[in-house]
Image: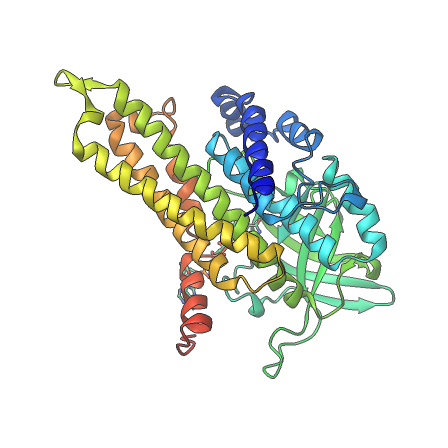
Length: 388
Ligand SMILES: Cc1cc2nc3c(=O)[nH]c(=O)nc-3n(C[C@H](O)[C@H](O)[C@H](O)COP(=O)(O)OP(=O)(O)OC[C@H]3O[C@@H](n4cnc5c(N)ncnc54)[C@H](O)[C@@H]3O)c2cc1C
């Protein structure tokens, strides 16, 4: 990496750390407990250009790439609260998808409003009967003149209550074994929480986020053909294209969580005295933390390698899947070790590490499970037969 680029990246890290420092544990506690969108944090991110970090300058963004977005996400997560994972729905699913696949009109309409913090997205993909097997979704969209009528059911959909738009995946043609990726379409659905044709039921999840997850029932929802993103029947391909950026963003978030767990554990281990000395002087406390730190720094390398390859237009699927797998695994392990370091305090809200473990643990399953990341590596990079 050139010196100039390294300097820019250092500046981004410093600037994001400064911003995040204004949002302390009490701020996040309040928003998570009350399930309230962190408006001031979001607007601060927008005002400082971070929501548009990877959006082209002609639409008001910073014109940078996934490397810089990953830095922002990692630093936000390392600073605590819900952190950088909140980038996944809007800057990644909304911003990157529209920038790469939207029409000129869609880009002009949506991208500047993503950059300035005006527009928020949610993503409607997962279905109860299909699960990880995305191609088996049975939400259908039937053409009726210049509109589509959509029926089906989605589950675990996050943050619908905060979203102006839902990126909704529906089947517009039946499954074709000759061309399995054909037949899905992506719709940009306005006002998903208050719209005729959509009924929401809150799911009871134990995830410490400010947003809810929902069961979404869709019955006779009408969407105009102009609100298709990309082409009809090409939605699965478009989505698979965006998945690499989603994995990079998820990995950066897990990385920040894991590093925060080590940071908190080190502080506590230096501070807490038992048997007349800091617990951090015992190797039983030191070694797990040193090992976690080393693992996370290694996982960081592959995460930024994935991001840099994506920005250069190279195939980064090996790196994105490895980054997703390693950051989520190491971060969950680091958070568990941070809990152990904290003794009984590890289970209190005040010391945050149990919540950090919950956040890290979610990234082993969401947005895609680690088993699927391993399946991808085994099949596409080791040349082993597909098992399913
Ligand atoms: C907090 C939270 C937020 C979420 N937000 C959203 C959202 O905003 N939008 C959205 O669309 N979805 C969302 N999801 C859904 C999430 O993406 C899915 O839960 C996840 O992809 C796993 O799908 P599933 O739950 O159907 O698991 P299943 O598909 O039922 O899988 C269950 C287990 O079996 C394993 N498995 C399945 N098939 C294979 C195989 N072939 N080989 C090996 N192992 C396999 C899986 O890895 C997993 O461990 C969210 C989920 C959670 C928990």
